[in-house]
View 1 (cartoon, rainbow, N blue to C red):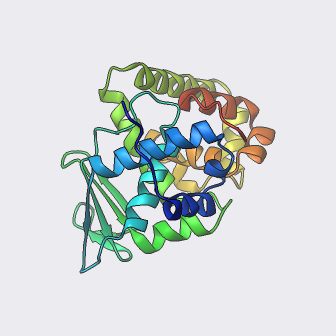
View 2 (cartoon, rainbow, N blue to C red):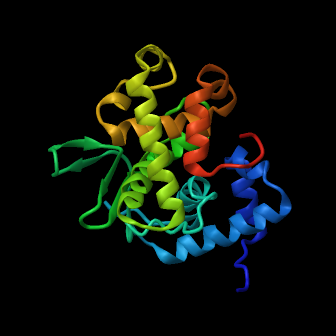
View 3 (spheres, helix red, strand yellow):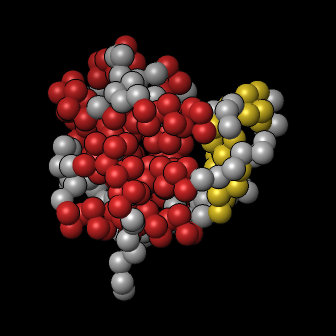
Length: 229
């Protein structure tokens, strides 16, 4: 199959926005570009509150999904058909409060605040990247319902990680007290997984140094074998 390509401006945007992309080999970047274009074409991006959806929005959002699934064979995240983009925080009727991001698996919709999403792209190493956070939860749910090899590795590795922390209370307490993981990361398995992956992608060196066992299991879960990780 012929690889889909990005133009020079789009490639420059990816290089400016993502350490991950800059560290890829030329061959890996070609695969990444193909996946980004394919993901963009597969999803329906919809602007809300009169927001005009730009190519930059579609490119940066898609790139987050592709980074997280770059070790997967199937990178489309079939749980998502539509991506709704609000200018800023939006009101969710689901729990009657304002959100920066929300996943509705029943409607196969991911909803994000562009203001908050863009902040996560522009400010590195805060472990508060909305795109990584929301797509991590989507991949988690998608892997639970799919039967492909990548989904099986993901779900089995996460179970092993959860089991490790259940049996190792000192490690669990160290995680809870660490500056790495925000408080909501321990509310449920989906929040926990998203925060773990956020830290893995955003701050791999320090994460690996402080929590080598958790890091190794997360790397296995994502099948990550790329420069910098």
